[in-house]
Image (cartoon, rainbow, N blue to C red; front, side, top):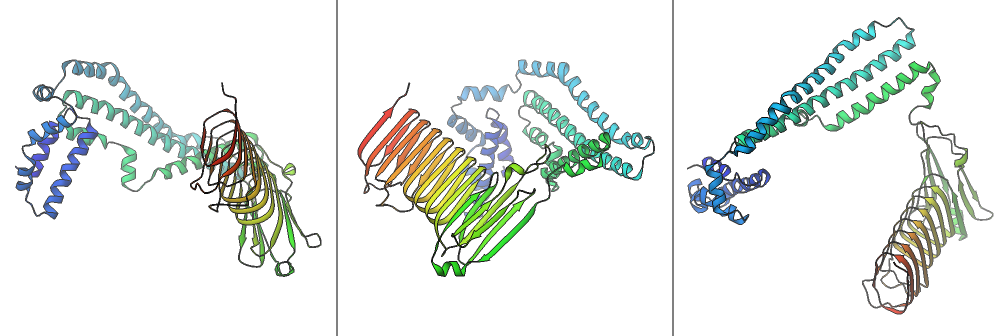
Length: 481
């Protein structure tokens, strides 16, 4: 007996197992043949002798899955279930006999529309040059959509036909696994992937086609050429400001940084040069201004979101990246935004105030003596964040906080209010911790037992409370129904 014959017998005997499980088992023994032949220098005959009779092997496999021998013997003797066979034949007559032809007919109908569409467009009255161009663009978009529709209908037809055929093979010829495997590969998209035609090609083609049809149809029906300027995303523009702050650094003066930026993505970082760099990206005029007041030591960056001219087809998209020298002393930083994502990375400041109406706040390796963070709707992540006095006010969102030092001996007070959302504190060291977690879970865990929290108070209405920290004095105000 050869390896191929042995595996074929084993494959036929595993008829009671799910096809995926049987395939995995078969693959295992295929690999075993290859490995023992390669690494142990065994012949196929020796491997087969070691494995034993394929029928006995199938019996052992069934036993491991809790299938009794009598059930296996019954399956070997009677391959076809009569009632299941009657059911599948009835399904073929009552459903498959009209469903498959219907799908083929619909696909061919769309194909006919694809073929006749150029003749329909050519029969239209004569237009001017610009209108002809719009019609050509419109036709190209429709043609692309028809191609995608034909491909999609063809794939749906193949999928349903494949499912019906596989059902017939499993019921009427359960041991014919070769045909089932062959039918599983009957897919237009799988064939396209095999010839390196990825799904993204069709997604991009569909998006382009829909955009072309929508734009050209809107222009043709309204006869307003100026609508083009209001469709789609506006071109992105960039403004970069670089300023040397060597004098300011050498003077040793403390600066205040104030940002009021409306709806904008904000990133604040440090650099190892003496230059300040502001990168401002925008697709609409947001009335961006920046002022470095050397007399009062203030850096002010501001946009006026309320004056941005948005339309129903185009939205504002802007971002600011502020990079300051790491030797510039920043005494106070105040950040105010509306719908925004804020990142502050590797920054030290005496006083930090953040107020965001909606969006996420991410602070990484940030140090502040006093900090106040307000976020009405969004998540707050304070990773390796150190502050002596910290106040965090949230209405809805998730809070995660961890500190950089194993023991921050001068951490005085941490006050957290979160009306709706979970709070997770990890390796957070303060003398006094006061938490109001109205709706949401609260978890406080420190990996060291050296530091003790002097006073801990939590007020909660709903949610789990997990405390794994040494606490000297603890007050819990729990009002849960």
